[in-house]
Length: 250
Image 1 (cartoon, rainbow, N blue to C red):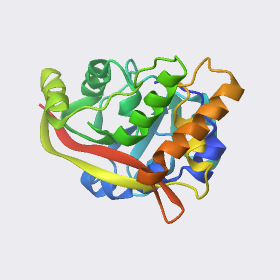
Image 2: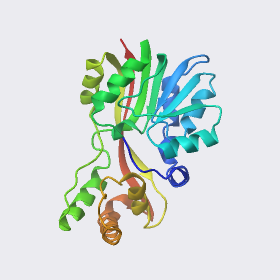
Image 3: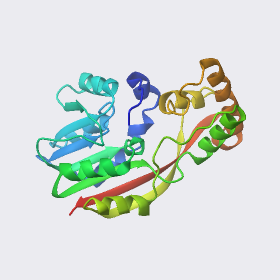
Image 4: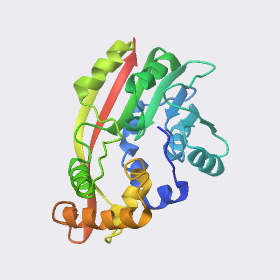
């Protein structure tokens, strides 16, 4: 789950990550006095929304940069640095919430086991993250261009189907109650810098070790390949697909 994050840029140019998931909060249905974990909390904006219900919230993220920003913005909330695969809590919680984080975590079974251990019996698990087919067009163009430069890379994320993830939940003692897999074509900043900016924020693992000059050239080539499919009327998009789940610990 480790990645190099620019928390300021994340909030400014990529705030869609948390804003588009605001309608996930009603599925969580947080109540006053409940103890809730926000796993992969980022800069803490959704954590703060949960706290406004009167719930006691802990935010955990593997990025020290993200946690520093979250603590600065919301000093009254308990934010901690932790790994989704191995975190522990002093006491079990009523619910675990996670947005746009679990596709960074491999192997996924480790995260689900940690989530199960953190939940009380009957506790809720509500999450959204990248699902099967996420960024298919973007990644196809990216790997085609990289191969032309003699560079082989693999998708660094985990994008499961509903059946695949439901099986992992079941193996860890969590019952899947609701699930959906859906397209979410997501607008980026305008201009031809949109795709490079997306890669600079989210694609560090793909371009690790590639010299800056070559990377810049590859970004331009990818942008041109995608112009006909992910640009409309001058606006750039990313072809996201999300998996959204609601589950209960047995």
